[in-house]
Amino acid sequence: MAKITFTVEKKDKKTRARAGILKTPHGVVHTPMFIPVGTQASVKTLAPDELKAMGAEIVLANTYHLHLRPGEDVVKKMGGLSQFMSWNGPTMTDSGGFQVFSLGSAQRAGKKKVTKFTNSVFVYDKDAASVEELANPSEMTSFIEKVSQQKHFTKRIKPAKLDEEGVTFFSHLDGSKQRFDPQISIEMQEKIGADLIVAFDDHESPLWEYDETKLSLERTNRWGLESLKALKRDDQLMYGVVHGGMFEDLRIDSAQFTDKHFSAIAIGGSYSSKETLYKVIDWCVPFFSDDKPRHLLGIAEVADLFEGVKRGMDFFDCVAATRRGRHGNLYISPQSGGQKKNNFTMSIMNSKYVLDENPIDPLCACYTCKNFTRGYVNHLYKADEALGKRLGALHNVHFIINLAKQIREAILEDRFEVLEQAWLG
RNA sequence: GCUGAGUUGGCGGAGUAGUCAAUCGCACCUGACUGUAGAUCAGGCGACCGAAAGGUCUACGGGAGUGCAAAUCUCUCACUCAGCA
Image (cartoon, rainbow, N blue to C red; front, side, top):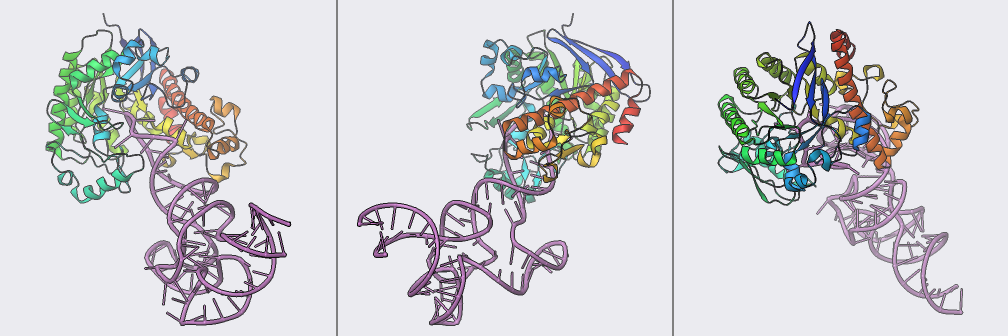
């Protein structure tokens, strides 16, 4: 009998939205749910009791980072991820597959940043050939130059080297050569010991054409099977990852393949636009079994939550809440001026908030909004006080978790579309 | 009072005859941020015109000189600091 189970409690009548519950030995998770990202076994600036207080039910850490520091063996000896970070609840680890690309490739091309929704440029060095010959050659040379000169890059970019069995790349900490493959990733994730783990996947560049993307997907599928094969523990739930870029038939193939082999399904990838992202979900979800949890990897802005849930997704994780929080970009509801155009955020550092006595969002019940004015929070950021970044991250994570909770309640009460209308118009 | 050093944009601090509206920090203003190499990054920051490219003007303590040309050299005044009286 499975130790981790997922059940759908209620389905929306008009959309694919659904509410469910995931049961693990460490506690239950109600869906739709936002999973705060704690890459290095820490949700940046936030303590576990604060996460609990705002309704977080699960946190995500990253295998790549924990492998480099402190090492999966340390985490294991310290009692596993949950005990190590004193998080009394379910946990999840990402496989490290994504880092192979976010690290081995690069993040910016001049003013263009490599993110999910801009014109992405990924360095794909499959034959260890010169990077200039790779995708988008016109920009690549200056791109590598500029990226290498970024302040926080202490070493020149060394692109990841991909082969059919795995990936060789270089530590961002000390430049040391690292090797990941499905077996290694799963072994590390078993040692780290999260309840939910992710199969080791390959990651296509959004710039690639069909054939290249297809080859990448075949690799992901093969690695997925190898990940399953490498699994020794029986108390962890492994997500398979759907890929296939922006090609409908590849995504559908991948969705079917993943549903066939895995008990939990994640959608991965990078997208050239939100529209592409939503289309991809639309293509895939019809091929997912009802009783399997569905995770949209790395995506969870306000609008994405509605759009993802509407299309049938259950779990969302994203660094945006914590990162934006640290950077002073705070979520606000439509009543406070939040809209698609501003990603439902405001910049608390703007001078117009200096004398503002209102909370960040009057409708928000988080600790920050209950106790502090915009003027004070503005001051904390300006003064570079750590408390400011904490209050910001706290508000943002609370905001998204609470939004997921509202969405869940709306589904349970048959008014999902009403809520969506109120937010997205 | 004598001797020496200094006075540059909101602040600190480069420059020491032309390529200087003036390097670089800080502060300030505005953006960006989606499986976190990010408590980060990018742009702006004398005035006026311009969407921009660019243009015009006023600036390196005050004043007076030398030079084709001065933040940079000379004289002088003011102020600051250090040592000696």
